[in-house]
Figure 1: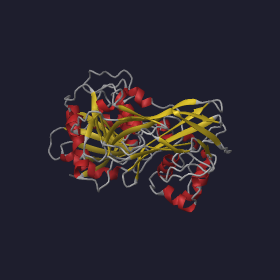
Figure 2 (figure 1 turned 90 degrees about the vertical axis):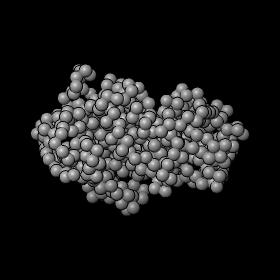
Figure 3 (figure 1 turned 90 degrees about the horizontal axis):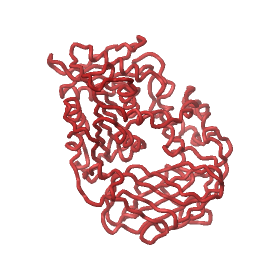
Length: 518
């Protein structure tokens, strides 16, 4: 199947470079539209896959990227209007039957969603609303500027944003390895203060300016697309990975969606790929699933409900998301300081020093010593295999002697041989009177794992998780603007602290494809 490149006019006349792949034959076709800042040519195999199943498939460079002229302003530009114009253009083509699925992953998922949402007075009874797709596939959705820049609990996502902005910000094309090269030349690059002016130092390694970097941190309004999704009536397929940093946003989008909504959470990271060494039972053909779901969605065959499936790690087993979502009754509490829960090894009192922060890029933990930098706890070996599916939470009773404090909780699974595997991570920011005990809830994300018998759970409670997250200066100043760092003394009260894990009490497995497409 041939792919041709055309120019689709934006509302102001800007020509948007668009690859079009049509199936053989002359009958009218449904269409799939992907709008991306990452280069439309990378989707050519995907377009041919859609066309082989009878869909007209299009991939478009967003304004200001790759083959499309103009200026690109991530999350603040023309994505909704340009997407709506492209959907209208598709419906005007001689090969179109009028049905359009907007699809995409990461920022491209954002493009698909804003095209489908924020449309006032749309008539849900109309066959097609001009400029609005009929269904949306949103994979690992990066939902907005504020949603990607900060955790729901406040701390800034430093490593991910620096890497993304270095690779894609303020340029017409992409350079995926830009941050790695800059760090090779300047290993302490991400320690630069203030964070708001990091781009000035980063520019030396990149050989170019990043003028949009400071504005990245200005927007603090989270959840806009999730809120708009409550009024949507078109079908949604939300796809994510339990190892993806935006898994909680994917679940929130699905949970709040107003139309028929399906959720698929696999054992994947942000690239939706699994380790190639995994057994075949742990793999899933996402392309075939997308096609089957799109056909059901456009034909109106989806039940008007909200359900889906979550993978139990690489076991090949999938759990019903209805049973994985609280209140499922399968929650298990692991109290701190208990022989049957999490035993305190050391660090009930510790020192969180932003000059020597606990590292996010190492699972090594201190063996002990007089100057703990974290609270460390360990469970006894699991007496039997444990299935986890759903939201995990740490609840800690703790004290900080500074007016602002971040609380990072990292959960690691240690297999019977002692090999460490990351299980969950959560970090929240709390402000309050110094020295005053507080009950702090730290969401640990969405788990989908099967832990074998003999596994131990190791929990770390720290004041930093750097460089994944910017360091809290502990002064009460905004961490993005701060230039002065001070240490913070912490106390964790084991008696008032516990870990709540979403244990699958009754193993009722589902097949993911039929579950998503019914």
